[in-house]
Length: 364
Ligand code: GDP
Image (cartoon, rainbow, N blue to C red; front, side, top):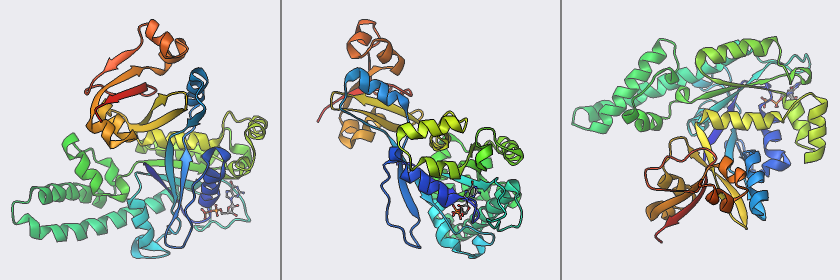
């Protein structure tokens, strides 16, 4: 599955947010036991109203949402790249994530110490980014030194790695994160495997006081500007509100949200923003037993999509019976969609679209 690491300076609200994420009834969290070295890991259901729509049309007994994993990565402080705080252990946890949710303190509260002494989310973002850039630089230097030996032979892989590392090193030395580099399609896989911390897409999560949850405040406006400049994602959220909502049932939480002037829970927005940031999309399988959502990356072909369900589906792939979500709803199910001529049989080169309702045929 896909993993989002939650990072940020101490006392910005990471744990509050993580706990809310994994405690919501909707999230049905599968929490792994916490210990000091292992970060907190939680699986979260990706909210998608289309799933309920499909289940009610098809009369499915249950719905199974698709999931996104969040990792609470504590211990990142100024100096982490030099081993301050819990330093390097935690940097390694970020390496394994596909994207980073960077929580920024945008709330005023004199009772909660700010480690840098004042509320300045843009400066805080730079502090963390600097640590990650230093850690990347250090690991690049180490890796290039190790590669030097291999480069004497005709090791194509080593040469590719070194070339990409050199590009990243140049950017970092000029003060830019590795994500500022655009690599070719051929290099994309190797580039991802380098697992550079600053190559990962970033979502800024502005933690605001309750009163600013709907419209943000002057600090979130500054973060919005920074996010736009960097091509990063951004959401405004009140961790406190989310914590309260996570303890309510569905009906109560709707009333609570309405009272606060919010259309939906911030966590739902956060999860979806993470999903978008990772370039993910959803397809559905629908039957009498269950309606289920599955996650694929945008651009995945039908056999690859089948492979998310089971490796054998991909290996023995024959074809995918396909109905677009809107057509499924318009036809009030498969039979109606068929009558309307909206039922398609797609082959190996079909690029699955977000919302497709699929049925795979395969050789066992
Ligand atoms: P972490 O160190 O980033 O994980 O931060 P925590 O989630 O432990 O939060 C640090 C402190 O800030 C706790 O006492 C929280 O209750 C408090 N806190 C978190 N979010 C908010 C918020 O939106 N408003 C206020 N006033 N306090 C908050």
